[in-house]
Length: 278
Image (cartoon, rainbow, N blue to C red; front, side, top):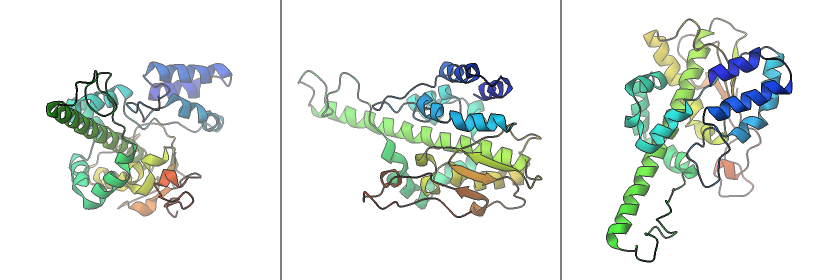
């Protein structure tokens, strides 16, 4: 979607520019999500529409805008067939630190994050032939084999959902790290990334991956002359002035008015997280 953001910045200051921006994103496969369908939950046109004031501000100040996430079509591919269904070229584009990406999934703390946070947003999709109890429709679908097939299908859905979410987080963090490091010599440089709370809470999503990827790129000389080109962002802000080793002190996360529910609190009033210190 980077080409669409670039065109928006080049366009005039009238309503046509914003309409063309939304139409362009819709053509890329970004649409309004149905509450019962999380197949493309990373991109929601209605959420983007609410961010129009931020885009207007960036445009008025001539700040660059950077699209962080993978192509929606690639996420749909992973949602259907897992990470192995993505071409090697695409995987290399989104995951520069393959070893760190894999090792993170084996970390006990990340496994806890996965159970308590990442998978909380997973919804099981049942086809028309499956009734609400998980058996086949028509009243004759409660056999042991039918139930076992449903369990296998649901586990596969959950596995593909997990794969899609960690790919999205890794790709966004990789784009962020490349831009930040490519602008590291400028003490005035700051990247602000805007993301849903579920993608930054408890440092298990985009924000928590940025230091690891930065350090990998620094060690392997993998930062291009312009990073990835332009900049913008979401609920997580990363300083681009880092040199040497990058750690979580270089990334500040601010949850904007989170509800207790959004922080997965069992209390209606107690929020478990509001972000990190600068």
